[in-house]
Image 1 (spheres, one colour):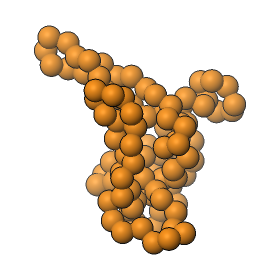
Image 2 (image 1 turned 30 degrees about the horizontal axis):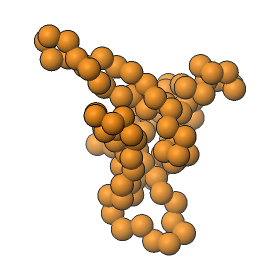
Image 3 (image 1 turned 90 degrees about the vertical axis):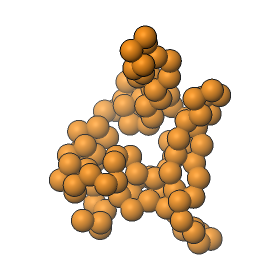
Length: 103
């Protein structure tokens, strides 16, 4: 995907659903949040990330105890999806093969 703006957004952006229409649907937007974008993927992450709907600040929080020196990771995909689906999404959306140990 290279170093183009499109490549940077494609590999580092998070979907942010804000606004809405009369039917209650959301408009899909994407934002690049430099600090959170540094977190690596794991299908068994020790943290989760979300974007505040009112302030649009992207935050990460621990979802389990994290030891000193342990890498903080988030899941880029639905961690409950079947392994084949998670791997296909990782390859198609982020351009790398998921090597997580979780089945």
